[in-house]
Image (tube, rainbow, N blue to C red; front, side, top):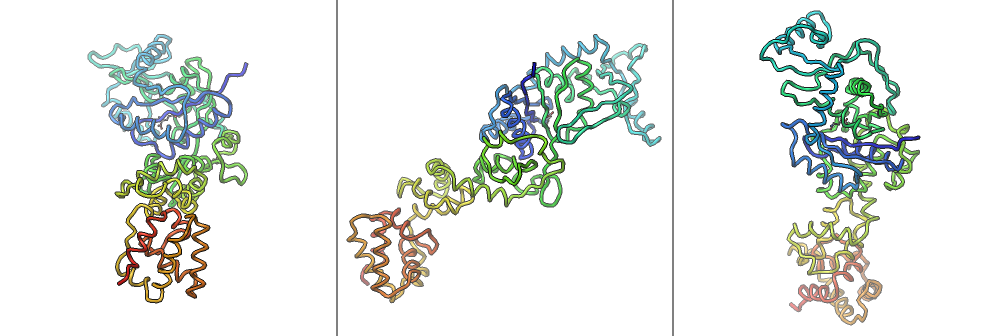
Length: 465
Ligand code: GLU
């Protein structure tokens, strides 16, 4: 019988959903989706001092925004304390763990001596098989009996085979003196209970794996396969951090990135499929494999992400974009109810925008009053242009159908009659109707602004002096 694939994403809620975490989540998710398996979300919140509800919320929100839907969970480690206690008791009863009464002073002394001998500081197992009567009034910790000989070998699906000698590993504390279970132990119990078949996680955890493997073996639990994903670096080769700019998923959303752009970018960052750069998540879940995950760290390239964002904005549905742009315009004090349909406006502009605020910036032109600065007006509405503008106004007034084909035809006629070249008319026309010199093609702008607005704006500047 083949076991079906079960993967998990196990964030610690001590900050926002970092792009590194999002990429690990994405790989775990895609691996499960491809295998028609199960993707589990587990919140590792046992560090009570550093875990916050805000962070839990931000992580769940980030995952939802990216569309990384989980099939089971979210499970919270803080709600599984009774289960951890049960396994600790089981370990103690089976002699696979023991109580250690060594005091902090004793351990500090041990460490000092080891350092003096240039040895790696490690617990020496003094309570492992001790028959000594425990000191009164000391609350012990529980330590796992790590095997004394041999070693741990696992075949990392990204890094290849990894072997660590048990002599390198000391007896890990699995419960503190207050009874609370420790991090590596909780991960082991959870991976076992949740039937995880593939642990895909950041390679900052690779050193934990041998200890976790030993504990799983002691539990008689099947070992999952491990895949440790190399980290993400900034342009300077340092580990990606806030210094490098946006690193949280929420921040990218706030800055006007589309989730599909970020997903595509993260999918490709540290994994490749031939020369493919642009692909959907459907394709990604078909193609994804750990063999093509990079063994070396990946470098984060904000420019490439921006390029992908531009690509996806171009492809995005107009109504969806309008929904994203509208709040941005509102922030600028603009009311989209007073003006052309925002969906039509974004349809005109989306080919040239690389973020949502950028698109909003361009769309703002259709919802402002379009009044030019006096100096700009003086510069463009010259004595030479004024008669042509009046002619254009009267021809536009006479137009039956207000669409860009008809408008464009009228502009051509006026150019011919006035003996002007396109920019000589289009520039002042932009200034008069839009209050600025940069706009998309002028016929499309006039069409969208609408007859009444355009004629009204022309009239306000062309009234007889
Ligand atoms: N909670 C760990 C983290 O956020 C992940 C542990 C794991 O995936 O095993 O880094």
